[in-house]
Amino acid sequence: MNARFRLALLTFATVLAIGISLSLGWWQLSRAAQKQALQAAVLAQGAKPVLDSMALQTAAAPLALVHQRAHLKGTWVSGSTVFLDNRPMDGRVGFFAMTPFLLQESKAAILVQRGWVPRNFEDRTRLPHIETPTGVVEIEGRMAPPPAKLYELGGAGAGAIRQNLDLAQFRTETGLALVAVTLQQTGAPSEGLLRDWAAVNAGVDRHYGYAFQWFGLAALIAVLYFWFQIVRRFIYRPKDTSLHG
Picture (cartoon, rainbow, N blue to C red):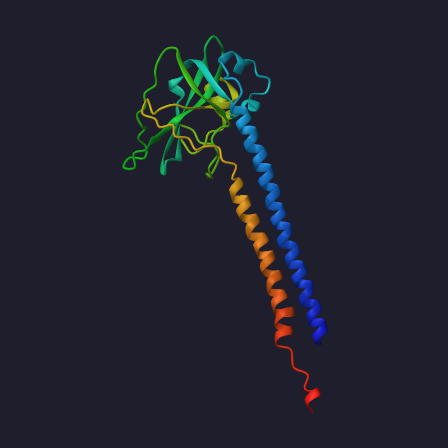
């Protein structure tokens, strides 16, 4: 393999590596733009008028209401409260308390993510104590999809303590006409529950960070090639001694 062929091969590999790095950098920037659009959509939803019980019941596409604020009136179906296990809040692991809420003057209900409560690690089967007001109450929150599902063996569980909750199955289990979206209750801690929900974060900064790394790698490859194949060869090239013979 002669020197020219080696140089051509090295140049090709360098151009290919720079091209791939730049492409990945631009892809990360495009992902950041998508996430920015998503973040803007979330903010726009939060700025819409507050939903009431009637608006929720008559919504043609309940999932389109996600991230919108709501003020609902109705009664708790306390006998159907479920505690989702292994759910963190403020760096601690415990339960998310989920209770159906029957909308006033309606047969429709909504599953409410009421808040977080610690678990008893000495007796993992003991249900935490939370207060559930009786009668007609008013609650505030923002519309949200059901909590993310965690990995579990087998199908969806049953009982008061569960790893996950399937909304369709829970609708059949309770016999309630649950809408296809949940309410994440907001407000100060009360009823034995914390409500310090994590803010919706699209992760735009992470994509900018990755893009910077890929662009930096492309620049590093270019600088190294320029130094070793051009500058260094020019500095350390053999001197022509024919003139001093």
